[in-house]
Length: 158
Image (cartoon, rainbow, N blue to C red; front, top):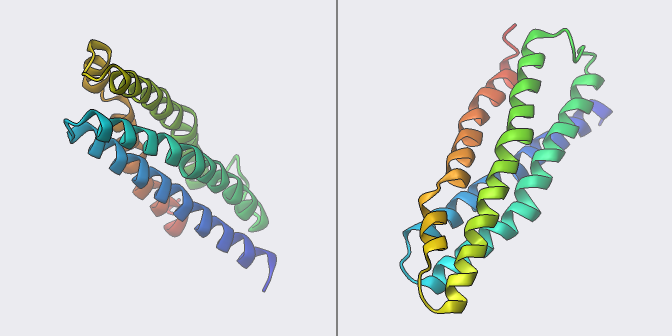
């Protein structure tokens, strides 16, 4: 067992952590969006908020950190290796654009659902938040970036 194998295992583990968070957030968002019951909506968005905090964000950060250490351990230059530079760009887009926008949209819809549940009826704010598909859209983009990042990591094409 050498450092490279340990880092590779940590990279794989953190990638699964990130994917689990992304999937859990998306499933909760879809369930909340499809339900007409205010209680189910509020609970679904609360669940998505929870998964975002314990799985999605830490998993995304751990994936990047483990990747940097792994590629550095394997003696790749993080600034001149073409496929690695593209992988870094895709990761930065995911971490600095997709994940924060998922969180912002999720926070808005979660608070609107909680307010509507407290009021006992659907509110105009909840309807506007439900019509705004920002968290689902950007989680979809993050999901679409995953195969590209996996391809670059596994095949190192250029």
